[in-house]
Image 1 (cartoon, rainbow, N blue to C red):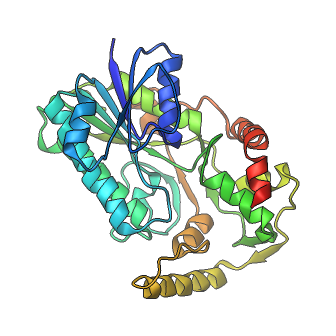
Image 2: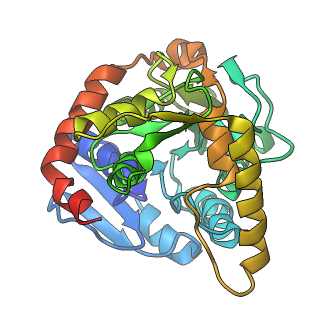
Image 3: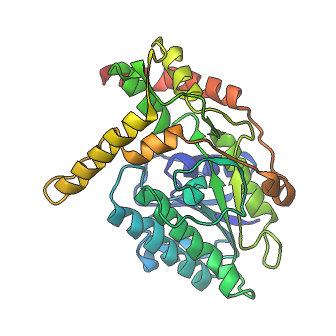
Length: 343
């Protein structure tokens, strides 16, 4: 029976991967994380720093498959992103190689190919971009390169690697998208829509992202066509970006936006805010709600062709966007309504 290590297994995606492994009967499931956030007697926990090789090697001992889901959330500084997403990933690759791990599945981002321009039916032939709009996706690209380079630079390596590029993850226990929507509505910010609201994008339900990761691990071996490849994973049903926040607003009794602010106006406001944030950085670190990246991201058309994942991994979504939104709504109503009402 294979043994699994989920790096970042106490986080949003990582914990879902752990639960999926346990649900299908896996008996050797390990978690590596900087802290322990839940209890489960079926799991072996390893607490450590992803930037420290010795911590990782202890956790990788006797492991067959590693899922690397660890990353700071959006809105942090470049130095932190680089130390975890790049240095930490490089350390994990070394630990896997030194420990005889057979497989490493890296959680990347669909935005490693996004520079602000519309992406219509984009696929894996899209190149990395020359200039990223935010440090998170820049460092996710560098981390992806560090993983995939194993296959490129050492075709005979015993470590098989691939990257999964999810687009717009959402679902129960989400700590970014839905909480931000609902807190914004609580603060009266749901009255405004930036742009036309017609731009299509991919939202991907958490169970589908997990499904893509497990398929990659189940099918990938050294020498296979999956080794060294990146795969976009989506729900394969792009919808207007604002459908998701509006659904969240209305599910909690808030009105949908009444006013549309032209994208050009918000673009220059965000540009100005970014300028002052950078100017004040030596004195004070600020995490504004409005940033240039968020304005561009929420107004661009961004959806992807997942034929490669269908062909190589046998992937297809197992939960629709609508069912995923309904499940997310129900979970937040039970678990987060009190939290939201206090904001």
